[in-house]
Image (cartoon, rainbow, N blue to C red; front, side, top):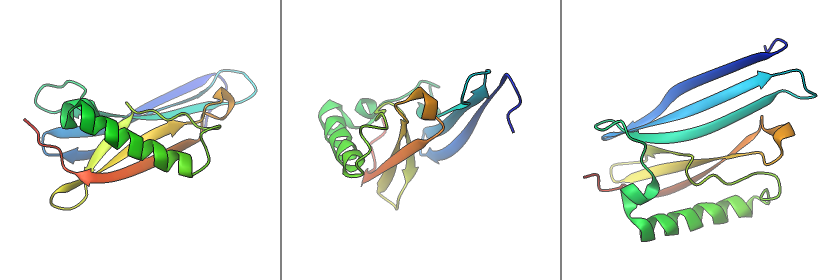
Length: 131
C-alpha cells in the first residue's frame, strides 16, 4: 500500500541465460497528485562485463531490426498502440528450449496517468551466439 508521498523501487532478476542476466525494474509512487504512478521496465546485462546489452549486441543490427519488427507487429495486433508505448530497449531474455529464447518487451502506458499498466509482448527466436 502506498502512503501519501511515498516512492517504492525494486529490481529483481527475472532470468539468466548463459552469460546474460535480465532484470525487471519497478518504480511506483504517489506524490500528492490525482493518481499514483507505476513503471515496469526490463534490462539485460552481461554477467561477465556488467554492461547493458541490446539486441544489436546479441544478433547484429539487421537481425535485431527484424526481431523488433516482429515484436512491433505483435504489439500492433493487440490494437493498443494508441495507449501503450513500445520500448525496444526494455527487454528480457529467457530460455525457451535448448536452442531458442523468449524475448519479452515492456510497453508502459503512454499516458502518465495510467503508467501503472504495462503491456508485455514476447517473441520466440533462435538463441543468440554469445561471444
